[in-house]
Image 1 (spheres, helix red, strand yellow):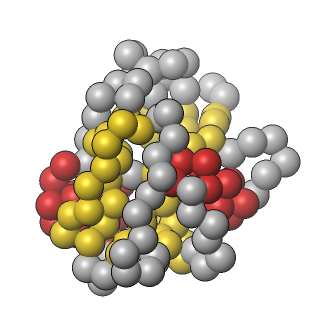
Image 2 (cartoon, rainbow, N blue to C red; image 1 turned 135 degrees about the horizontal axis):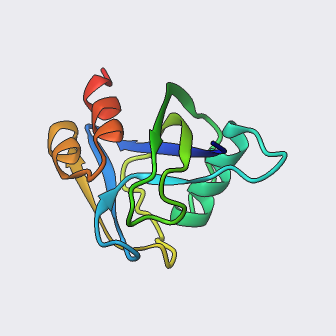
Length: 130
């Protein structure tokens, strides 16, 4: 079985976290995306943040990793995906400039954001943050 690599980034502003609504499948998620060939997880996270929110971040805190298998309704069902997760803290008042992958966003408390997230692994990582 082949494996794909992705990054996931929780964006924190004060006590709130960013959740974004996906245009393709209509669920709430955090910022995430694939790692391109030859790219490090860290570099991919910085790129995805910029592409999906317009944020040019400098500091990322690693949160750990997890793996999952794609669902039958996703592209390449059954593919094993390895995800490295990060946290970025933004300045008060910062707002994302969403690209075509998202059509809405919300700033929510940690618990409310975790409740809204579609996938369990990002929600678990979020709940574990101090």
